[in-house]
Image (cartoon, rainbow, N blue to C red; front, side, top):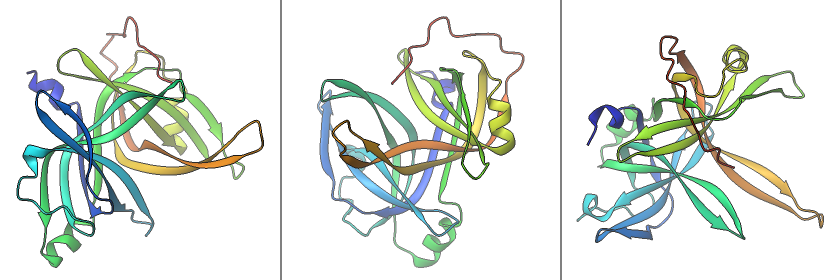
Length: 225
C-alpha cells in the first residue's frame, strides 16, 4: 500500500454519537457500520456528520448515543443510485476511534474538534458566486487519489480572498487545502411545488496552497454530479 497516498486525505473529528450504529455493508467478510456524529463549531452551532467504522475497530466498545469519541480517518466518497440517478455520498471513513470519558479531556479536545487536510486536483471548473449580502464564494470539486487506483471526489467551498483565488483555477491544477468538514441544509424544489429539506456535506476551506511546479494535469477526470 502506498503510504504517500494515505497522507493525501486526513481527517480528525471529535464529537458526540447521535444515532445508533446501522449496518452498512460487508467487504471481504468484514462488516461496516454507519452512524452520525455531532461536531460543534466555534460559532456554537453544530455539524451532524456521517461516519463509517469497521466492526474490528469497535470490539467491546460502547458507541451508544451520547458517547463522545475522537475519530481519525479519511473523507471518502462513493456513488449510490437513488430514484434512477447517481448521487455522490460522503462519509468519514474511520481508521482509528477512541471513546472519550474524561470531561476535562473532552472539553480540551472540543477546542479544535474538526480538521481536514486534502492533497488533490481540481476536477471540475470552479463556480464563483456572491451571496445577496455580497459574500464571495467558490465551489470546487477535488479529486484525491487513494491506494488501489481509486479516487475520492470531495466538494469544497472557499470564501472571500480564497474564493477569488479559486475562481482562476483550472481543471487538473494541483492544490493542498486545510479546513473542516461541514453539513449544510438546503431546500430542493420539485416541479409539483413540493419543497424538501436536504443535507449536503462539504469541506469549508480555511487555507489552501497551489502547487505551481506540478504540471501533472489529470488526463481524464470523471465529473461527479
